[in-house]
Length: 229
Ligand code: DC
Image 1 (cartoon, rainbow, N blue to C red):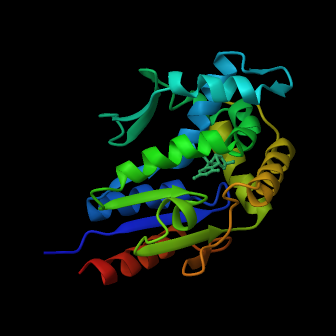
Image 2: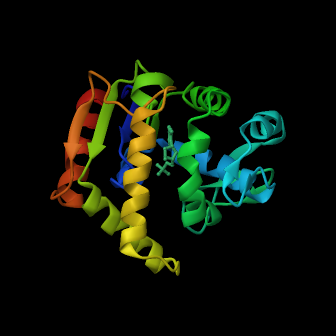
């Protein structure tokens, strides 16, 4: 019998964490959880309910509204992956918009939001056999995770990846706008007071600026299988 483990994948935005985490989970027969989608879903809710208006986020109102927000992941039978649902509505596509990307770091910096989502994430790890990606998985959510990965790449390479993804999704954006968003999010994510993005001491760093997806995937599979078998 193989051992069930928790795999925590943290790192900067647009480093391809989700893609490789999903692949790895599928390969191992593990559950995959995208915690960025959870922060994005709360942000989407705030935009829909005018808690975020033109240029302002009403932090107090968002904190008060938290009990009204129910977040679930439900399997999408077409893609084979779980989509984020908020109060029963599938928001998987909406949460990837530039508007949500522009606000999400500010929402993720609110301690009350983090507390609610971290509790939910820890519940999901009760059975182990989990691949979870985010910013604080190896440091805060599962400090005892058996395998911790910290992914990074240059801001320009990451902006280029996200730009191509957004264009493919039909969004009207410029590369410069996306690069600015990547840099802004790095700054907010690494300097916020509550659970800033930092590498866990025992995390293995993967800089994939020039690494092929196959090489990266094989490396992760080897690391995981070494612990499982
Ligand atoms: O991975 P992503 O780009 O979808 O994440 C969206 C934002 O959410 C990002 O700016 C950082 C924040 N986040 C976080 O603070 N903690 C997590 N565990 C996951 C994401």
